[in-house]
Image (cartoon, rainbow, N blue to C red; front, side):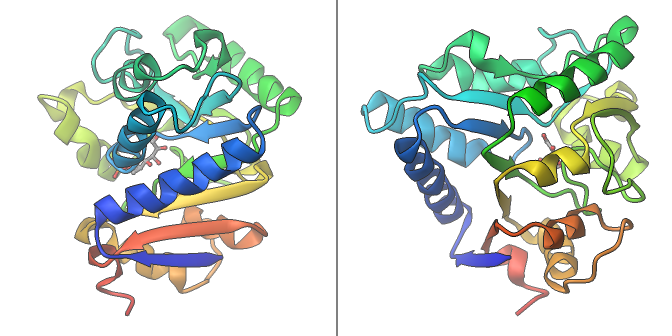
Length: 241
Ligand code: F6R
């Protein structure tokens, strides 16, 4: 695991965005795994600026998102489908039919998991972007999840629901379930980049860097992968240095 220490979140975003762009220039048909939440927003802003400045093109790229809340309509402002359109997709030249996000409407859950796993088998991810939950989740693989897990319906922990409450008006509105890519599928990506910024990630970063591998801390599965780069800022490192 390669650790890249940056001054702040802006530097993390710039460095990580540049790593992705270098890989896309090497292979314009790259298959990307993408994340939602606060962590990737700076990276997406950089990509948007660079597409506008014609520094990079996503025309031949394919994307797979990590997860989606169960039961939120795609037009719900907190659905991850909506998030991705707002923060990235509608601003860049990525064709809409190159986009994959788990379809998490209530009557389709099992079928959606199966078809997502099949799609990932057919189109393996070259480069996966991850954030990390305060409890060490990657995607929505909560503590206790097997490292062999494929795409599944997860019951979100109360900590995750509370952490994500900031995006909703009230805790009661935060869904209890999500569909997430499984840890086995994340580990199948050829290359993985994880970004962690801010003091609220310091404990998770400390645990990740301790190198102990345990299902109690899902991100520790990344120690089993040969090509992981972690970008952290000074705040996220306060408990580690
Ligand atoms: C989001 C995802 C989650 C987040 C994690 C950190 O698609 O898979 O694992 O990366 O919850 O969220 P933020 O970045 O909001 O702190």
